[in-house]
Image 1 (cartoon, one colour):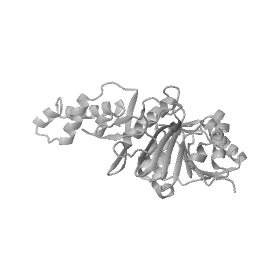
Image 2 (cartoon, one colour):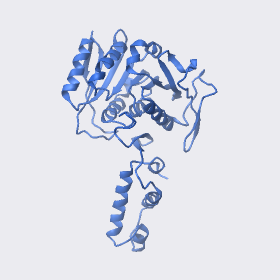
Image 3 (cartoon, one colour):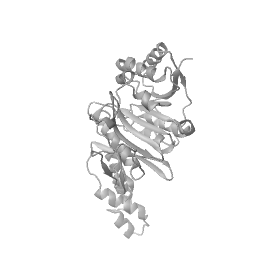
Image 4 (cartoon, helix red, strand yellow):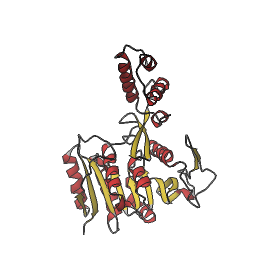
Length: 327
C-alpha cells in the first residue's frame, strides 16, 4: 500500500483526487474504473491501487494529517502535523514556510553542517531538524521547544523517521525507556521522561525527552524555553557549533527574550546562528535586527536557494540570516 495511505494526507487531497477519478469515469459514462475497463479502456494497475485505497480511506477531515517530503529517490521524510494553523494554543504544530526554506538551504549546504554539533531552537514538528540529522551527517543534532504538545509531536516525528536505524546511547537505559514499533520495523529508542531522573537532565533547567543515534550522529530532544537559556549550563554541555532557528521572529513581546538567548549562545563562543524569517511585516523584522545590534550581534543575509528539493509557496518572501558576534 502506498505510504500516503498508511500515513494519511490532509483530507482535502483525497477528496480532490476522488473527484478527478469520478470525472474521468463520467467522461465515458461509467460509474467507476471497473466499468471504464469494461468499455475497452486500459487502466494502470497503480490507478486501481489508488482507487481501492480511496474507497477505504478517510471520509472525514482529521485534526492531524501527514506530509511526505521526497528528499531523493531513496529517501522520504514523513511529518505528522496539525490540520489547523493554530492548535492547542500554539502555531508550532504545523510546518511553516521558513522551516522548509531553511531545510532547503541546509540540504544545499550540507558540507557546512557535516560533523558539526547543531542545536535548533523552536523545532516545531521537526522538519528542518530531520532534513539535517538524516541527510547532512552532523556529529549531533539537538531539537528543542517548550510547548508540551509540540514536544510530543516532535518526538513522534523523529521516531517515525529513524525507527529501525538506531543504536542506544550508552548509559541512558532505565526502567522507563520505551520501545517504539514502526509500521514495518522494530527498534529500541532511548526515551527519557521529563522528570527528576538524573540521567534525563542536562542541567537544572533543561530536560532530555529523547536521545538516540542515527548514522553515528547523536539525536536528542530537550525542553528548552528561550528564557531559560541564559540561566542554564545546557549550552556548555552541548557545545553547539551551529544554531538553527526558523520562523521565531513574529512576536514583538518575545524579542528581548529571544535576543538575550542569541547573545548568550553567540558571544564568546565559536558558534554561528542561521535564522530563517518569513517576512510578513518588514517593520517587525527591522525592529528585531536593530535589537540584535544592541546585543553586539551582526546579521548577514544568505543567498536563498530555489525550492528544488522541498516544494513550498514563495508568495511571501523568506530571508535567511547568518548571525554571529560582532568582531
